[in-house]
Length: 108
Image 1 (cartoon, helix red, strand yellow):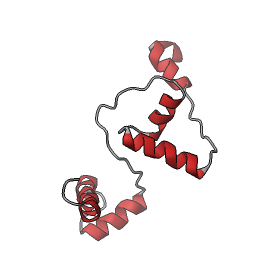
Image 2: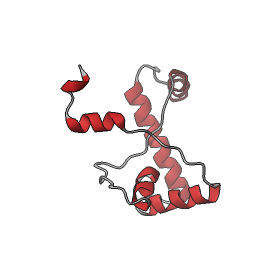
Image 3: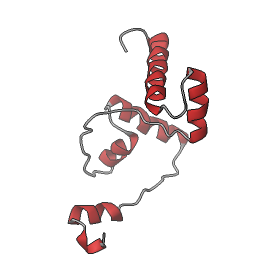
Image 4: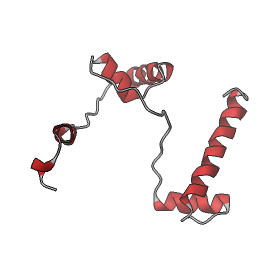
């Protein structure tokens, strides 16, 4: 698809760049805690602080990047094929939920 075929908003999105800030560990911790308290991502908290627009999350969720080796390790641990990514995701979600219950009780 040629660049001229893109919608104006898509063109703007393509031009967005990720910016990393080298700030103290304490400042990072503070921003991350504020984000948790506001139930938004740290990047959205930074956008709020900087006075930039923030979209309301459609469905807040936690994400993780898993490599092929990670799927192999988890598949072996959970007794499922590494190719069965949905089963691995479901079992991993249960492990995360059990972790929270063990640390913080049933209400979480």
